[in-house]
Image (cartoon, one colour):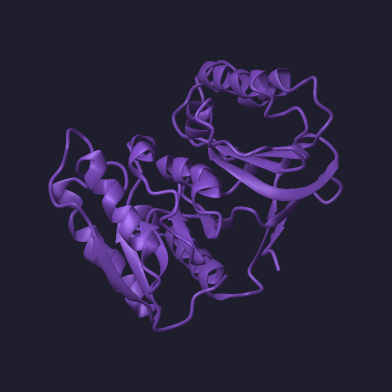
Amino acid sequence: MILRRGEEVAIVLAAAQLPDAEAGLLEDAARVLESWGLRARMRIERSHHFYLAGSDRARAAHLDAVLADPSVRAVFAARGGYGSMRLFRHLDPAGSRARKILVGFSDITALHLAGRKLWPRVQALHAPNIASRHFLGATPEAKRNREALHGALFDPAYAVEAPVEFLRKGRAAGPLLGGCLSLVAAMLGSGFVPPTAGAILFLEDVREVPYRIDRMLVQLRNAGLFSEVAGVVFGEMHECADGINDLREVIGDVLAEGSFPIAFGLPAGHGETNIALPLGARAVLDSARGRFVLRRRA
């Protein structure tokens, strides 16, 4: 689905609290959305609970409210951090019957994964959390992030084509699933990780050294997520280094038993560039062209 000018959208804090020094970013984010012709309103808990943006019940109630409201066409996560998984036991599985878009990444990966079961009509859009320099900054990368998100929201022909490095050659196509590796691993056993058979699995993370990446990939492997996957594409794995081990070699070793193509370096995730990826859309990995291609599902 796409948005149209004049439609109403909501901003939520589903996970970590926004530090006082960054509170102004909420208004800045709302102004950007309004400059796109959208009517933005906030469902934000003004108190906090430890490091969270309010109690689990309060954050879940805000999320349920905007998902259930038929006038809200898209829901934007203000930030990630931690806390989305704590909401599951409080969320209403019948809360959203209308088509809408849920925008965010990092900790919001948990909601994207669970949403396939809880809210099957909600389109998951892996894209910057909007109360962030990632989205609001003045850098060329932040500008590209805004342009990509705008395109993913408004352009029915939105597509992504990016050069990637292939750790194992091949060609594969399938619906794009995944997000932040730490969250995918943490979600195993929850009942909310969708089947990956025939999918292109996208994984990215930040400041996780190679041995921890190894451990999480082994966990995914042991859980069978790579058994019938069509292909795997990693993001830039921002600051995932220890100065000794080559992360690419570690990935190749853990996934050595598969025959599916493996790509590395998609500019999506915690790096400076975080292009919008409609999860569920058809993606192609093609080592002959050295490309990742995604086109919006018809």
